[in-house]
Length: 452
Image (cartoon, rainbow, N blue to C red; front, side, top):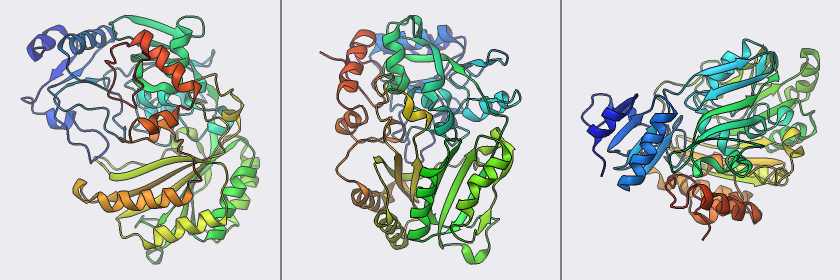
């Protein structure tokens, strides 16, 4: 096993061990259900440091976790007793506003990138959370507030600098290592550690969007999805059915009531955006209407510092949605006693669907709706009830399809990973894995073992 003193002496960055006062903070990931104690956290300074850590893990046989933002629901950003390769200090960004491209290091967060690009009236679409790290979301797919207008994050990825399992730094793009470039666009961290990503930037100076909260009924929820499907592709939305939390801008009488909470972004002219949003506002008398013209960077909702949710989650795709689904969701939420229980729905299509299914490792281009069912617990020991509730509602919504979005998968086993990469996609990924990581060094992820 590698000596942490040797690693500390070799790195330009820093090796954090259990003896360091900031060790407990450094090992935390977003999920409050994860409490792992790595032997060392290598907070790398550059690609050479990344190669050093990879070689150390390979030679010692220790488990290697790679962390960007730490938002993996399965806790893949931290190892029990192994090495954590922490990308947090790789956060440089170079924007070519005239050429509409950017080189971003993979420890950068989606919020920081979006703020900097927004100063030039430009954007790359990521997810729905500012604190997510680019190294995770950009390789897993990226389905956020620009997905219908400008596609997924992987659709804006032009190239990547990747350190492979043998410690070699390679440039992967359409011309150089094209098989690797195909695989990392949706295949996650199975093939190496991306240190820099080259993105296309799209002109998005502002959006008409924000939050709209309506009283929930099956008719309202079903109507919302129907309107979102019929809306022009400039509109992307994320709608959540849940009981109203005690948000400061909600009247006290709304707290605990069933609501439809929508986050919306219309990436087009303000007047057109107002017309497109009008039918949603008329579905029911809004409890809160926070939709307005805003800089795109303001679209991310505020995050509570130190918030580490303990939750069960199941992700799926749906080929349709009707009043029966809406009733099943609202009935289940009404009957839940968990601190939070919710169903999130994202209408897809548009630019995302126009990319051929085999162009990247994300093969679900034709799926019109993504659903995430989630429930929260107060402690990891209390997760059994929420997990059972999630499984029950997911089964009621599922029509025999096990496919899901890899970015929201938890620790759910090999069958779910294969369903995330159906058929030929999985076999092609396994072949690329065999070429770039034949010993499966990068296995703490939604793992694709190398083809025999």
